[in-house]
Length: 81
Length: 223
Image (cartoon, rainbow over all chains, first blue to last red; front, side):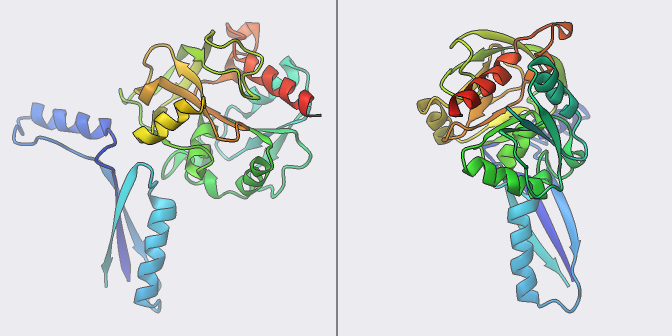
C-alpha cells in the first residue's frame, strides 16, 4: 500500500520560489502561464497487512503533525493500492 | 548563572553562543546534546543557530521531535529562560512555543551581513539592560528568516508588547519588519539576528551582548 502526501503553501502565504519560476517560464515564451505555486510531495510505503482505515488516519496524522506546518501549509493525502 | 547551549546535529553557532556567555560575560556554560532527556541544573537555555538535522523537511521541523526539546518545553513551562537564535527561533516556532512561521526570504537569497535592529521593548528578561528604541548592529545569516503570521497574531504581538526586535530596513520581507518575538509569558525569545556574533570587539560590534547581559540581570533578580 502506498500513500502520497502533497504539501503546498497556503494561498495567503507568499511563495517567492513559485513567483521566480513563473517569471522564468514566461520569459521562455510560456506566456499563457500566469502563476506557479511550488510544493512538496511525499511517497510513503505502508506494510501491506496494515488496516486501510487505520492507515488513512495515521498518514493524515503524519501529514498534519510532521510533513506540513499548519501555520503556513495545506496538505492533501491520496492512497494507491 | 549557568547557561546551557543545546547542540543538535548541524548546529554551528553553539560555540559562538558558549563564547558569548562564558568568555565575554564570564558565566559558566555547558553544552547539552540533543538526545539528553534533561537539562540538568542550568538557569537558562540557548537554542543556537545552524542547520539542525540538515534543515531537512523544514527548518526546525525534525528538531521539534528531539528528546531535548521535550525537556526544553518543561523548562519553559516552569518559567525558565529560553533564547532561540536563528535556527533556534525556527525550532521554537515549529514547536509552537512561539507563534507564526519563518519562511524563505522574500528575495530568495541567503542573507549574511550586519543589519540594524531596533530594540522595541525593555520589558523582558532578554532586553531589560537595553534602552527602548536603541539601534543595535547585529549580523543576520539566514535563508529562511521571513517572519509570517496572520493579521490577528501580528496585532496581538504588538498589543501585548511582544515584538522585541524589528529590522530598521527591510531585510528579508518579514511582516511588520519583525526580527524577534516573545511568548506571552515573556520567558521565551526567538530572534533571527545573531547577538552572539556581535559579542566581542574583534567581531566589529558588541551590541549583541545586551541580550546576554539582560538574561544575567533577570536571573540575578530571580534569585
